[in-house]
Image (cartoon, rainbow, N blue to C red; front, side):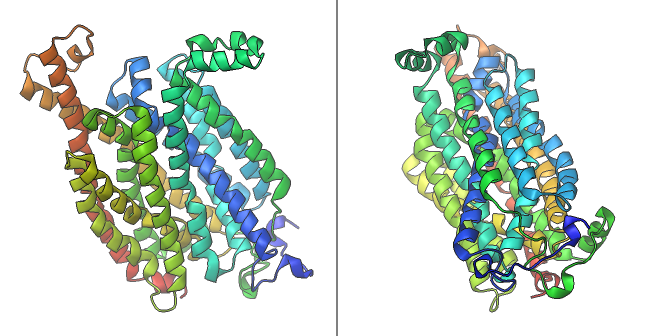
Length: 494
């Protein structure tokens, strides 16, 4: 008999009951903390490319549209297509092993990005990161659903989803600090002072740029996290917190999962709303540090640590509060999972657009902070709704289908399209300032002062207006969250 069809109820009190969830409360909280740590590392390794956009662009001599390809399709394509097979595999096999192996793989690939000798090599290593990260969220959400009862799942899922803003925050802090303070020669000197001269010489740290050091430093610790996952997380009985009538049922096929999802209109509207929000968010996020550098003349360190970190912290607050409020008011407002992000996005548009257009950081940053807190309320329904409209036999697959759509269209298209739009607007603004100048001419090192100023102004304005135009697309996402609110109560059986 397969693991999927075997449901056993533990007898000892410290293992919990089907009414309280699997394991003791303290152990469930520990599991949630470990899975959150995994997801934080997931987004550290995914997001670090955003902080390093400008130095990588300079190192390899590429344009915004090429950096958009590196930030989007290089990661999204295989991430999405590998995710569903891994999810189907995790419906029947050991989910903890899958998560641990995935963490180890993406961490290794992240570290190797630091040793890429060309843009193509870096592109390939980023694909490796995506393959590893594809094995994270589907089995992790399946585990959460077995550890936590339905009344606690939105909160638990929102805690797990904190990995997105917290991972981004850690990436901004460490990426910005490393690039600003730990270039190759400094690391080489540190190794020599520790009597590790052999390591300094073998790795030729004297010639390694700061962005390469950043990839290595954030990638290596993930190997330790993978070991902790394997040694400390217990695989719970599949479907442990489901109603008795749902237990011991046979596994369902992929087509059957799609058939069941096709009858849940709120699932598809939430998925489309999240996809559009992610399309905008991933696209803008890829170039946000670049925006601060170009428009407000900040250093990578200041842009990453002082501004982006503050925005990530506000995003974490919004992520947690959306799940907490959805659980707290589930009885009084069963449509909360759809209505919270809908109303939040209505407020995000004017806050972010005004913030991006403001010339003063003292005005821009508070507006963007409030907007960021409201924006990230869309993350809770990203996981809670797919897990809530199906039973334990299909949760990993339902989440994987959602992530397939969200990441293929959102992550895959957002960064390259905003990069392409930025390049087009850059050229347009440049021709208005000086018809004789071209983007290629702006790369020259011996430009006259007036020409250099025109290039920098066009470069900044092209990116700024690309971000403003992208933010207006939240109106489309708002429509889908409204449509989801009309059937979400029925589809989730509330």
